Length: 376
Ligand SMILES: Nc1nc2c(c(=O)[nH]1)N[C@H]1C(S)=C(S)[C@@H](COP(=O)(O)O)O[C@H]1N2
Ligand SMILES: [Mo]
Image (cartoon, rainbow, N blue to C red):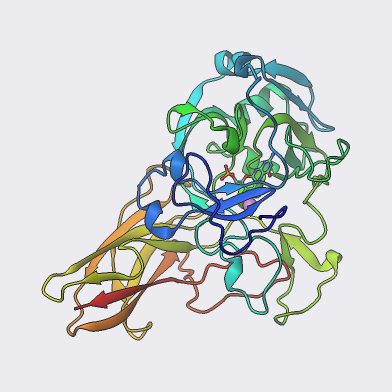
């Protein structure tokens, strides 16, 4: 029998509507997508990872158009409330492909191990979102000169059941919130948001840890200080301001908030463990992304990084979307290979081949993805 928050070996729980996703925890629900199921240029809803910090609201009884969003905070000049119906009729609509990656994606590989959901590579996705620009809504509220942060509150509840505690309430500096890609979205891939992904309304802030893209959005706060909501302080979504030795204990005041995510890539085809004949070139492809930056190059290696081959990379569909790369490999001898991919961002910063800086909560692992390949 499965107990709260933990998966007992022998059971293979699944998420309805998301065949093939690997459940990491059932309460709260967390599930990741195997790399080969992320091959689509635009991630279908059925293949988007789920990351919940608390218990989602019961959305069955919600009339989406009457859902109310409050915009307020110390640095909001004209606090307001508007329904989703008003949001849809008052502001221009935008549709963008935006990549979201959980800050803890890759946590499972850190040594010494760190607690938390043991994400391997599958807490990343790039669906198409439709909504309004966060900037337009902030503008009608009026961003005061002393504004520092833009934060969210949502309708999910704390695991403890205590109604006074929020599971999560995070935010971003005003400059990131005002970027033209920062969105308040009601649709994903042309359909109303799925209940697990924030129905009826969520923030989508591409390129930053997924945790800033608040689901089940009820309130936007323009703060006159760095937001101090749940999971902004302490060790949550923060890394040591200066590098530490693996396994170190770091005081809260020496931890810094994660901003833009680092450059990273995924091999989505073939599936790890694939077997291919030596007679034909082997098609290989995947995606690459780099937080606020674009990806300049992706290289592959079939000799453990001794030599690298440049791949063909496509421009992003729009800023902050992931980029498709593709190539082929032609091993000269039959046998077992590891295929590695390594992306480089437009500032020349590469993914590391080995584990990057260890940190107490296991964030920001952007080491190269590797798959197994059999050539016969
Ligand atoms: N209200 C609320 N918003 C939330 C969360 C949450 O638990 N509650 N999880 C965050 C985290 S940590 C991530 S990575 C993304 C995941 O989005 P998804 O579940 O739609 O994939 O949502 C973010 N928004
Ligand atoms: Mo996350």
